[in-house]
Image (cartoon, rainbow, N blue to C red; front, side, top):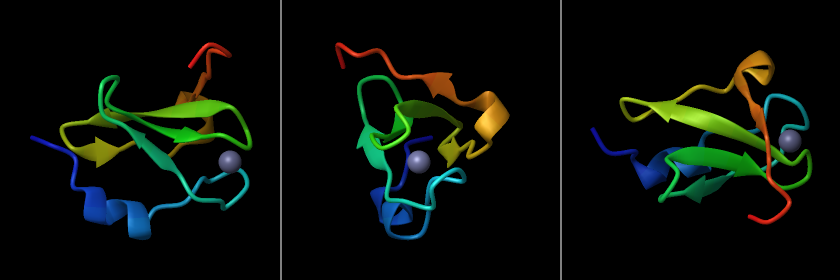
Length: 59
Ligand SMILES: [Zn+2]
């Protein structure tokens, strides 16, 4: 199931409440401010701080 990009208007980073960016290749949502990546499971973004992965500086 694909992530619905319309969700980007609704979802926000649980840490800073900021906007998230969709990383289609990695299927994750990225907060650039916190340098965290939230996984997307079956089209549903998992917006939990303890599930977020630190963003690689190279991305
Ligand atoms: Zn954030």
